[in-house]
Length: 172
Image 1 (cartoon, rainbow, N blue to C red):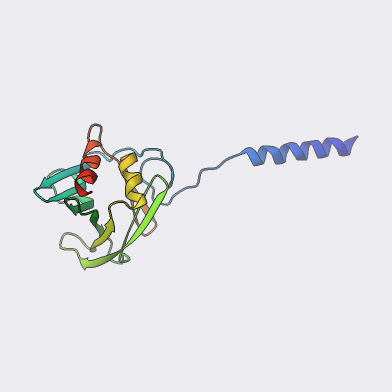
Image 2 (image 1 turned 180 degrees about the vertical axis):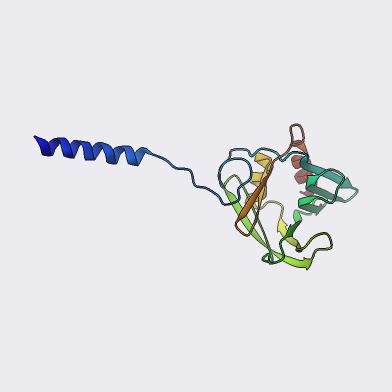
């Protein structure tokens, strides 16, 4: 009789362990759920996605209004279907811009130049506006930037999400 009870208890313990779920942790994650989730991250206080259009050029930048605090910028020429990404990196940053949005991720080879604003580098990269990571960003309204193993998610403040769609509609 003792052996069937032991088998039953072992089976229940294994079943309970199989049902337990653990969300992966992301080193340096900021806001929202883990990398790859569709859960919207929390906007950074005072920061937002700002849209600027000037004739044939447009810019979508995540940063602090009317300041040099730019976290990530996307530029394009009207209907070109191409983007230029810009970001700041640390002194030993790889020459790439690594972004993700809701499970889509991409790494873009970047030109790395010494930054005039901080101790690090200024990174620029080119990409197709219809790359899967940008399509997901367009749909979800947030994007995260990876620097080394740190991830910072950039979510819009309430009411500014249409800036993202206006930018991509402009870029083509």
